[in-house]
Length: 225
Length: 225
DNA sequence: GTAATACTTCATTTTAAACTTAAGTGTGGA
DNA sequence: TCCACACTTAAGTTTAAAATGAAGTATTAC
Image 1 (cartoon, rainbow over the protein chains, first blue to last red):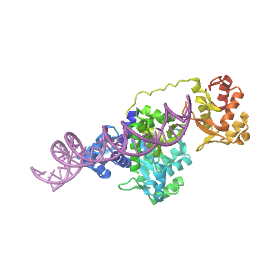
Image 2: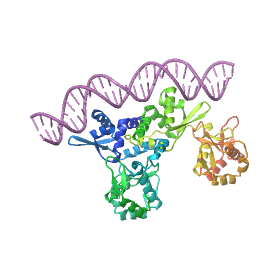
Image 3: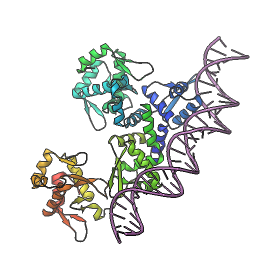
Image 4: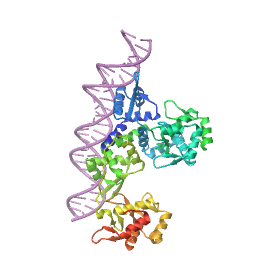
């Protein structure tokens, strides 16, 4: 078991592969050439690394014409990546504190749900209003919480039929607190983008909170972003 | 950030360091030599690796005589290790460790306070009930803790006038976890012997838990010894 | 058809870091 | 006081794996 653990960690730990895995955290699929550019290496090299990641079942590949699109193969993978990122020493986080309100730390996507300061605030607001309650390893949705999500127009019944976790805490690497992940977190993020509360920014995991979004978060949850 | 992520993952990913981190998952502290044996490498090599892990704030080290005991420095660390291990393909049946229940390991005195499995269990039970809280290098006694000790008939005011440390963690050689030492630990041991909960054995540091003691520990702290 | 693009494969070179050898320091017990 | 032990440090060596160079297979565009 420890051999597998070691193999997995060193697989993730190579600088080029780490960049690949990090890039995919924005939930987009990337082609081999894009990843080569991003990781600042050659196509041959990225091809070799991608092959290893696919073989280890960390990534899946989808051919589309002459392009190959890569993505995580399983939902556990972004969780593990966040957990590792979370280990980076606290002192380094403080060093960057001058630029505290960097967009990426303020509001970003973590795979398919909302993270950063806003993501954590949102989760804590829901906990504070008892829409969510924290259990051992998951969140539970209360009566009022179910009502609240339904009023937003999110179909909870459909979410519950999905195979993935319904509502799960995910540790935030910049805030060091939990934010809401799982099917519910993903649905909430896509709902907020769809309704123009949030806007994704090209080439980055950063997310912009629109004026409409600020108003909505204040009305819905008393949040001041 | 991705550089830190990569550095952290490759730090974990080295086979020897992975073994070290894996060994510590049983929540015990290990010495450098033990880890060298476990990882099947030389003391020099393990020393180099341990140094790197400490420098990265993944481990802390505690000197006790000529031994150095290593442990995780933060609670996020086992969380991340588990997340990585979860990425590995299905594992075999979990190995079950058989620990020998020699009396000296089970319950003994350590200088003037209680040690061994029972000593550690006792300390952990008090921490769990928030009678004690762990600070940097000492234990603090909470309101409820003060009440609990007073109800047992231990005079805390008198203990506080003593010159020695009031409540101090001491690393247990058989359990590799901390147990309560200092004036409070000493007072608790002598109280339990005085009340017939424990009985010392001649010519040995082993201590016997009497039937009365078993009952008392269950009633007072929910312990099952 | 030809040319360009996207990606792969394989043989070779490079290199970072793990390991080894050897010589330390500090502690504890006889 | 002396020696054994636990661990560290520094310098030199080895080696696994990442990067490179050259050649090759599809796929799309003109």
